[in-house]
Image 1 (cartoon, rainbow, N blue to C red):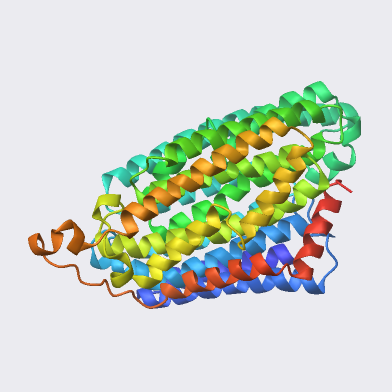
Image 2 (cartoon, helix red, strand yellow; image 1 turned 180 degrees about the vertical axis):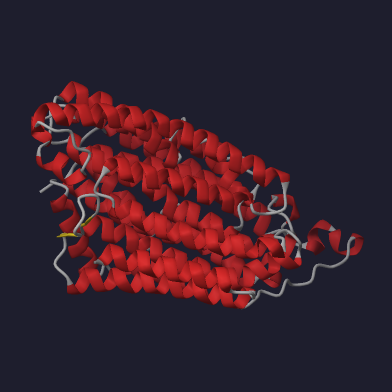
Length: 491
């Protein structure tokens, strides 16, 4: 019933957007779409017995899938509110052609529905199909701006992510064959595979996991399949960048987490754990080294996304219940914080018509909300207390300390470099004044960009949420995460 509800709402909203003629109407219908999805998820979480069957062998609703869907719906809602004024600015600046407006909202609406179906997929092949569709529709949102570099970034995104997913298809074949040998008939259903994981051959399961990992890692920007991410996230409209980083990266991590839950029930656990830890550490290292001398604001945020996916991979690879608990919390904290950074960056880009560090000046007098939003968001994303990423990192590294002390020291060093990268950018860009640089007399003085309706609300809302999550851990959230850990077989 719940899947039919999501499909019905998605189809109705898509039809309404198709029939709409004004931007305000399209945006209102999209906001309604996101709010309805959010309401359905909350209703299912608090009023139904989860997990429950959906009436189809291809879909399954458990606490992990609901958790991911609620995060996605919340971020899409904030992005839809932000888009109200932001898209108007894009059209006024002729970066988005008015003829593409309906395509933009139809694409955004379809993406939300497909993401939701991906998280609710019980069948791994169906999940693979929906994951591929999210690549196509999100790439279209990257390419929708009137710029050659956006098209290049979108093509690179599709080529790398979809190319890597072909390797995952090989993993699907391996896994289907392996399950057939054990169960009598092949299956790719998460639930059946998890129930019978102990019967699966460790060697064949390891081979299947490695091939599946390639595709899922590319979706999440894990090294060495991350090269599409900085271009796509930095070139996309900021409302889209927030979704790419806060929602779509979670799809790949979701696939890795589900597969690792199966693997850890077998003798292949130790090898796969080392495998994940190695790729996690390499991903963090490559990301922070690229961040260190970064001069592009959105590229800095994009490489930060790569860094945090690496830390998440470490949390999954450690494989303890406590590490998984905080990795799940990390997903929420990262999604919210990264969205606030991209929303702030969008306003700053509208102000300076550039993302380059040398073009940013007088931030706090011209755009105080975006300026402070980016500063506070930067403190939060590097893991400073009292923000939630601090506690998540702390407990993941605490678990890692009992696993490998050298790993912890290496990660801590890399985190210091990441913090230095943000500090250097903030000091150089956000302390620059026109009077100090002498540009005030040489150029036309900058006038404050008029921030349109709805663009400040998501930034302020997220800052309040992450501050609240940093100082207070809600009991319902704690219970939800504990149930997810249990359902994945960690307890």
